[in-house]
Length: 469
Image (cartoon, rainbow, N blue to C red; front, side, top):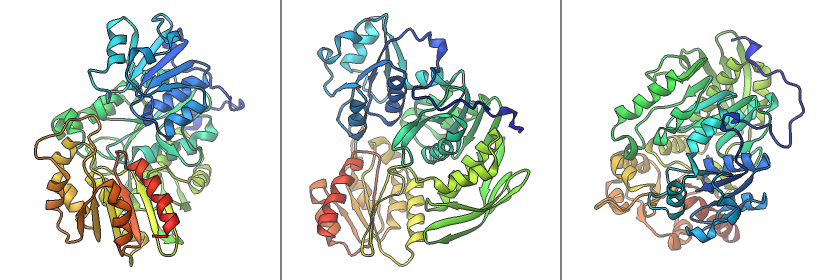
């Protein structure tokens, strides 16, 4: 594809991005978010705040994300009562309400807005409206989309792209990279079929493993949603080789339209070459561990190349990418202890983390601390979870984090523990975790999960630094 696609604007990066979503009329001076602390929701909240809108919202618990939003002047409360809604947000002609599907159906505030004629949109709908008038680069897939979209956002930042990310990019300490209004990078989330609200020009699909079966029921329905998403791509679709979709392919050490090869690791850094459909780029440096992250980098490279970014510029941006928080994030890295934090909550993701640890620390024992996320996901993939966790040297298992679900009879962490084929396994509690870690002989400790283990890891990090394990 020619560079004619490329946004050639030389305007200085704006402090406040020119507004996307003009089809909304921009009549809304007040934007109220229900579930504002969610990683995807908070990026949109930050976007509106940067555009000078009055932003407020509710979330179940306070977090680092909500504190950052509050520092930006966003009003947030943590109790679901009508009295907590700021009075200025009660004018239905001036207020737009945005909610996440993770909010329970009996939510008091949400039902008030729905019952009283407010304009109420799902997060996916507002993101679709925001990006509709842009040249949109969308990253989809059951795994890898947050890291891939963050890499792509970093590559596209000099191109003045505004990026809405599903994680906190270390380079920006943010899930929003704010620039102009001509080009957008978005994480296309398959949950609740959200990505079907987008209008992607260039897109990639990283993976199509079974997940979110509480929404889809069966893998075939999930795959059908990806087929529908692929049909929405107006320009170019890029897919990991082996997926049942038609498009440009990418792979590591396999024939593909975009091929990474000559991989080697030196001092914890990946070096590799890439063959594109038109040329070869040599000696790419990339700091994230694991071949799955080389695949993520390759997908981002392919999308940026199709868009029209010069390969040498892509190479420079890949070398300077620092990663995403909670994606193989080093919390402690000393000669006698390594503590890694990762969002992995699906068996495929757990396997990728374990492979990366064996690659980086082949001679060391590895202890995994895992908090299962959702009763339904634990039930649907119980044997796969057991197999993936069994590969670690030691396993500490926490109770299932329910998130939006009620308990399912018989689905417990004890059930999962019984299936793990490894003698060195313990069902533990948060209060006992530090002691259990200190009793372990493992040098490498990894904390995995999509629940509140992300908060717990900060406490454990501080305690271990004090005690040196």
